[in-house]
Length: 393
Image (tube, rainbow, N blue to C red; front, top):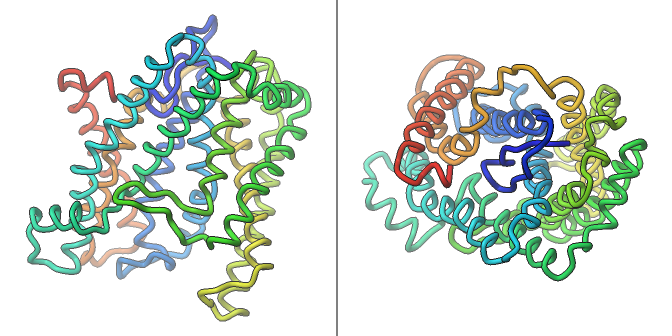
């Protein structure tokens, strides 16, 4: 497993490789595309349904993506944490780099991109509202949501905690790394162990907080039930990359790549189970606000199982088929982080402009996705030409 480009836009970097393996680069770019698809279709779901048009197929997409892609981003971001720390002998250097690549974009976006994005939603409720009024009310009174950019400040905290753990003991993640090495030949051992870890950390918080509760203070927000789940995935990724990752579960010569199709099929079982729980909730339980404990435990276990199987199915697929040559994902590779940062504003405004258009939900979502991707890509290219911006983006 070698790569010399950042995971999620410079959130961790490996040493220069002897042979380039593009699978992880392309996995990261693929996930960025999934984020854009997710935000393109949400208004046109029966669940979200903030637009007059909807399509049930979009509910299927959102249920799948919401159940794994942010956890996978954390896992990929953790992969090169230990190698990155090895090349930064002073913890302050690492912390300064993380603050530049994660903290600074979050702060800037929280007072620019996010208010611009949510102003589109505000205009649907109050068409005459001025932007300056909306901006001032958001940052002084609230609520002050951060949209998908909550990921940045949470990742910053995880990275700094990881840096501190490395300084205390570079061998802190050795147990996870040894488990990863077992996964080189026996990937199912690693996958089952990861499922157990994530389920133990996720299900109790889901039962206690429910899935809809967020810890929030201004733009600093994170879903309460998933905070330990994301922590686990980040440090599982760090454990895989802690030592000799080429001999671990994501090693290019390991058995995981050949198991991609089996993992993809297996992921359908917990995915269908989640739909089963949703049907029970709506048709049997009457869609109550407070769900019984057995429901939350069952759904939580299905969620954890789907998350781990689909994550490793995607990783296995890219290890098997996308390690060399050219891919349609390659042109976006260096701009993926910038696209992630700016896309939300474009998405919400495109949805606002299409709100009254009499066209099918599929057509609206397709326009939002294609135009949102192109506009976000163009914005990123333009921003990278600003002096010193390339160091962040």
